[in-house]
Image (cartoon, rainbow, N blue to C red; front, side, top):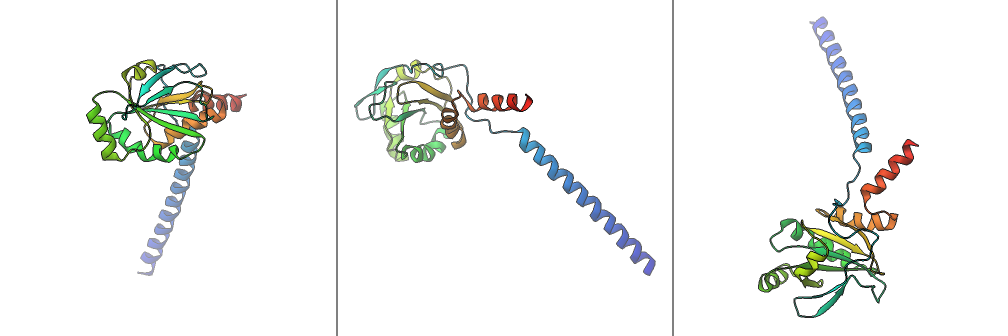
Length: 200
């Protein structure tokens, strides 16, 4: 009986050591994957105005009938985040709190834009308690070549497009601001530069 107990204890210790080695290997592999899988940022597609070029300039009417100049140099020196959305887009609705939070930044003006039926958008604004400027203009979406939603364009105070892309999360929204801060068109471009530096 004592022999059986010693053998079972020895086997248990072997199993514990093997499991420990497996855990260490898995932790190492997770670290490697974490290094390889970097944040993607907003998906920059070929659509939309060229980053670094002047933004399309036009006038758009908000839901209250007030005209807003879009793409022009900002008289108050603030950048503009132009966010294209739809009342039927669930991702757009999920991003509204993040947009409201960004809209409280003194250096950034957040403007929502869409097109379609005025009554539908007015009901959406009331239901979601949206306080940000909400423009309703089909020409605005055409000028910025919006093909997928939600789409965001960051325009600096001089009226230059600094970043744009398809955004599905708060991180994607913030990646537009980070791309501008890093002086690149997108986070993907910044990551490519970093990889090139590492390879050199």
